[in-house]
Length: 362
Image (cartoon, rainbow, N blue to C red; front, side, top):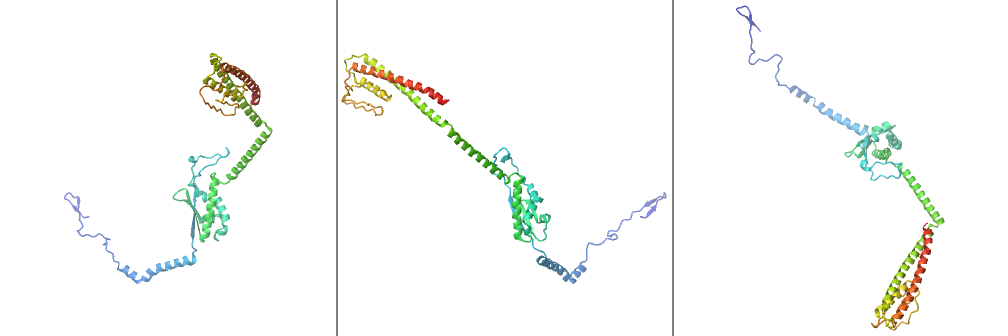
C-alpha cells in the first residue's frame, strides 16, 4: 500500500480499492467441462457393462456349482406355568402358583449351554455335516432366542440338509425341555419319588386294614356293642311299659272313684262302659293278664289279644253291657290289682337290666 508524506514529515497511508470486476488469483468459475468424461465412457462402454455381467456370472457359478445351499429349521418351545403343583409330603416344598416367576430371558442362554449341546451332539452325530466334529462346530450351526412372546423360545438349526436340520432341531427342543424341567424343579425325576410314596401309602393302608380285620376277629367289641344295643332297647321298652301301666292304673282309679258315687244296683251307662273298655284295651297293650270278664252282650265286642285291632260295633245307645255299677267297680278293682302286679314285675325287670347295661357300657 503506497504512503504519502505530510507537511510535518510523517507519511500518510493511501488505500487503493480493487476494481468492480476484480477476480482473485486462483479463482475459477463453477462450470466444468464433462465432454472428456463422456467420451471416455462411450469409448469403453463394453468395460462398463461387461464388468457387472462378469461378476454376476461368477457369483452364479459359485452359488450353483461351488457353494453348498444352507437350510434353516426352527423348533418352538413354549414355556408355561404349571396348572397345579402336587405336594405329597413336607419333603417337597413348592412355591404358590401366583408367586411363581419364570426366567424367560435365561432360557436362550440355557439352550446354548455346553452340557445341553453335548447331549444333543451325542444323539445327532450321524446327522451332522462332515465338517462338524465337536460341540463348538455344532454351536456355530445353532442359535436360540426369545420370540415376540417371551414364553416362546425359538431354536434354529442351519445345515446343508433340510431333513437333518429339522431332526437336530427337534432333538434339541426335547433336550432343552428336559433341562428346563430339571433345572427349575419340574422334572420327571420327581415322578418316581411320588410313585414310591404312593406305593408306601398303599402298603400302609393295606396293613392298617388287615390289622383292623385281625383286631375285629379277636376283639368282642362288635358283639358287645350288639348286646349293649339289645339290652338298651329292652330296658327302654320295660320303662315305657311301666309308664303305660301306671297310666292305666291312674285312669282305672279315676273311673272307680266316679262309679263309687253312683248306686251299686244301677246299670252302668254308655260312657262308663266305654271308659272301662278303653282301660281293657290299654291293659292288653301292656301285656297284662286281665281278670275274668263277664259274657259280652250282643251289642259290643272287645279285643282279647294285644295284637288284634280294636273294633267297636255299637247297635244301640243304651249300654255296651248289662253290668251293674257294683260289678263294674269289682272288675276295676281286679284290674287295678293285676296292673299293680304287672308294674312291679316290669320295674323288677328294668332294675335287673341296669347292672348288665352298666357292665356292657364299661
